[in-house]
Image 1 (cartoon, each protein chain N blue to C red):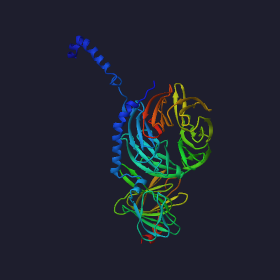
Image 2: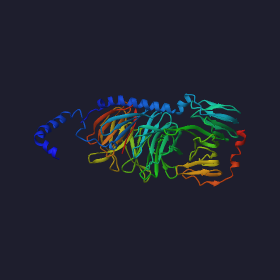
Image 3: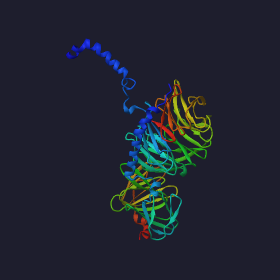
Image 4: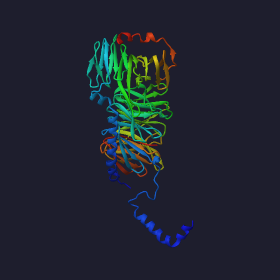
Length: 222
Length: 339
């Protein structure tokens, strides 16, 4: 037998669905959920670049490129791609107080993840290069993605370096970092180092002298 | 017992027929009075991704009712993947490169994750621990932990990844790309180990009940089958212009059959999937722009989404007749159902 359920379904949908959708939109608004494009359109900067040595370039989602020269305050938005050139460095600060320094030849995207029970987690997707991260003023969720691993932090200081083949080196200066690949996670603690490689679990933490690892940040942080 | 006995004969003789008559009279307006409803959790749930209304429509696949519509909180929902337990629905959003995770019990989004430019399709690994998302414009696959929603890695593939499927044993992932290839990925190393040449605009990929990987060349008129033992094309068959997606179901004793949506014909073409060589069993007329298709768990019903007429048709595979047509959001491009 062939028949159409449209007559039975339409009234149900018109009454229930509209209210349901409206509720969800309201929920999203109340939680401050915005996509990359809407956050940018609304002009809500998530960070600012505050110092640059050499070539520090920001690629906006609409194709516009901006550069910071020396000290200043260049707003950064979700979806922005940030790069440094050879022999260049940069320093940026998120609105929640997280500081990130970029070493030379670094390239990352500013992203986020939203979860209904946790809110927004800031994410840096590091394609190549090296970053130093320090959280201040209590726990602040931040994650750094590389092609083969992710470092998740709340309150810590660490450096992360990505080779062109994706190999990732994590050095924790202070605190604890949840370091993981698709094949397993490794908690990495103060003054230890771990490596993430494609197709493998991150290596067990090994003691390391962190001072040389972050020596490059001295100039840009002044 | 005594009061009941005293009441018995005369009253029952009058009252019982009256009671039955009253119930029968009210039967039409009180459907289900005489047949107990299925337990809530056992009904088939069907979902459509409505690309132009940024929503997912929820349907009851057994009673043919639309139950609600969920805002993905993103733009251009395109593909869907349902966890084995039916509790998590993963939605790619093509326009803004994010994946929405929906809790199907509350029917609310619980996470929104940026994967890459033009997030196209999503597939859950066989153990459901990871979601793999193909990002067309980045030429990558993002791997997401399905518990903590964290991206754990990215695999570079060929140009324009369009479809993803996993082998039955989970050792290989197959990714179709716009450069007319299917990339074979070793899932233990996250490396592309082989590229298999296929036709123009290879799109949808899925694991068949025969353990082979079935795909369509949407840019031409055929589908192909890959043997995972050799990672070579084992068979092809012409089904009509712009074939889209494939589901597997039965027609009485015949089957499993591959049900293929063919946009250029406005038909579902039924291919015999039981023999090494493929043959067409029948063609079923459907609505305008058939694209998404899924079969219920027992293979007696298929659900077909139509991107032009904005509805999902429920088709009984035994008779090849349309059982119901459910209105959904705009441009329903993908349909999935609970197991």
